[in-house]
Image (cartoon, rainbow, N blue to C red; front, side, top):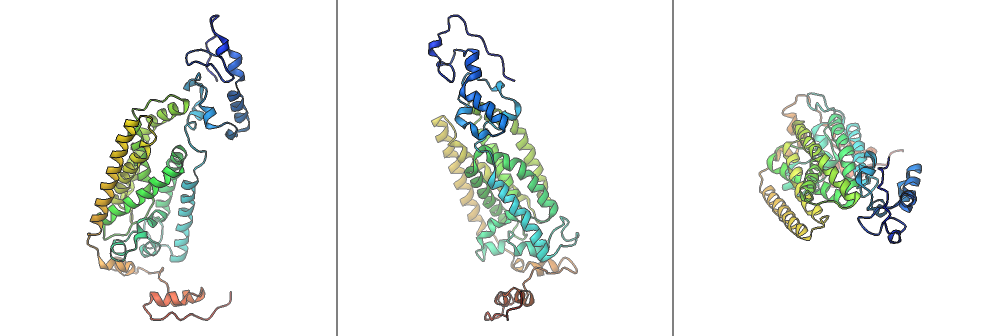
Length: 378
């Protein structure tokens, strides 16, 4: 429902009016102008068809005579969004949901005493790209700093992360835009894995929660960087109100995700590393959104310096961390602690022959040469 508009006085100069409202900031539009303005007509058409593409972002914030109270709660929740959908956040969730069943199908489901999260064996997680310090530092498998975000310890672990990402992750991608979102997400993934290698080099770990913590850290950075910015348009006012409301949400989310740090194969260091990295990256990204040039320069300097110190220090320490050679063979390592532990994710010659990959099986079995197997039917 629209708020009642003040009626024009007899002294109002209507010659200063244009098609979309008053020509001056403090004048008032006659009722006929407000009800028939092109922007409002488009908005009504858009609401009737639920197609908000009929009006542009500029038009949604053009009517300076409108107050933020003219918008209902549903519209206020989205008016400051940069985009309507969250393609990257959704794509990551889809990939994560697909990979876990594939691991369980290929490598089997571990007993609950080994993996209480209802998921695969630890060696399966390592085979698919889990964080493993000895392979990262000594063997140069740096891709393992990123691949853990696609993996999860089990169904319970996956469900927790997916629910948070589909809620907060999707919302913030719509607010920030996909570019800022992916920079924060991947940058936080690297930061979380690096600190995990430093603090817990003798454990493998998986999960997207490090990146999710980075999103929370970036949102916290946005709140701090822009807390002195005063909105002048409906979009800016809505964004300002949203940040105030999300402050408690961010703190609560950080507490929830940190509570998941004690899940098997998930570590607190990854969560903390992602949070700190996301905060530093967020300062850099959101410094560019400030209207105050001095504020932009100040926060950009703080953010760049924080990122440089954080990543250069952590990476330097990581490459001096002592590793455990036993973690090269994760299957044999866990067989020491669990009786009857089965290594179901090791490539064997029979499996490889069925898929015409005998040379790969020979490589993993330490055999010289790469002799292929006879082609099988199908």
